[in-house]
Length: 230
Image (cartoon, rainbow, N blue to C red; front, side, top):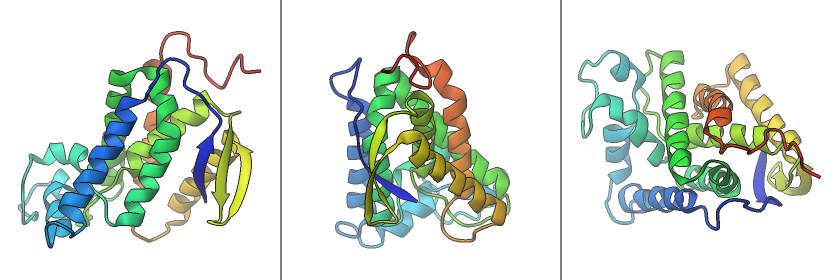
């Protein structure tokens, strides 16, 4: 596993990635106001119950959700703006900060927002289909962020990244090796059935969605696989 720190990849079409920054600000604000406990005591549980994806309830609504704030299909959007703790939030937002601006640059603001939401929706569906009887709530932006990561390595496999490997070793390495290793870890986790709080199927769903959508969502003339890069 690795933690991205910086990529040497300037924007080519935009001055500022407004949508990436806005998603980060909105997601952090939602956590601080409604989930952190700093403002509303017990808000974390209420938000997760009301806005998270519950697979069994999504597929077979039976009143298992004690709090209902939005129609069940809409939870495929709301869940990705909620997080379980500061580490969960910080990790997802760091990946989005490092990789999201270049994907937004390659698409434009509107298409990037649609891309982000679609990747998150597909990730939520993948998790739900893989675990149809689960009563556990799915929250977090990791599925949508996985789509960003997948799109990034397809667009910019040769770009150099500064990353922390094993949480402590700084390395400058090409994106295809860092991200390729991360993707391989997700696949292995699904194949061997690692049981923890991570939605491995959601990650894979997001990765597939990002890979499928990026050729269609990129601007005309934006190359794949760093073609033309010196």
